[in-house]
Length: 194
Image 1 (tube, helix red, strand yellow):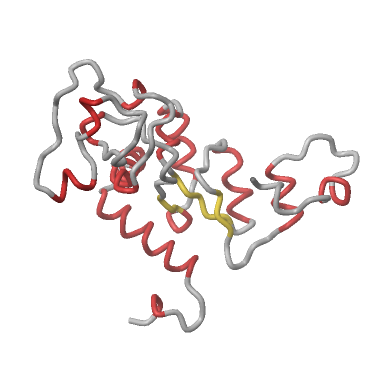
Image 2 (cartoon, one colour; image 1 turned 180 degrees about the vertical axis):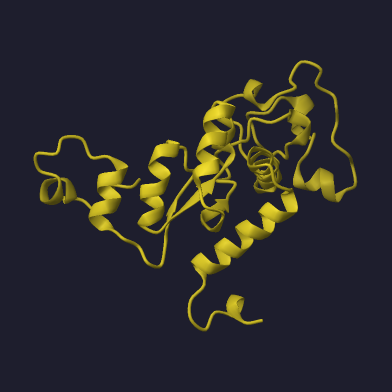
């Protein structure tokens, strides 16, 4: 986590301040001219401007879909378009989507027999289509908590964030890609060469 990478900082920088908040931690370590990622961000909309001033990028995963839609939308609208990143956080953060839109990890023991072959990497490459075999399970929130997330579920995160920001999936995908290139590139990087 945020505090595990800098042991002893509480004693040195936060004496008498009580609880260490993410804002205090980032303020004491930042600003971050090259950028810093707030992984699977679920913080409040009110914290976004301060984190942005410190150089933060906001990365969103399937966990975002577990927030109340109004809270997610308010927070997303506060993030500058040049600070948005998308991630799967696989094998964690299974999006809370319609089950027919999800890809599953082959060999995931938490899945029932009827769901096991529904959408795995091998079922897609073999040409089979997703099964609509489950009349009972229609939503990922009904799956066991330990169900693994597949990296291909990034499309669910893209769809959700695009709908919340009232933009197209294509525009958001390009925006997130450009932000990732800017954040993860370095002078001389092949990504920066055209």
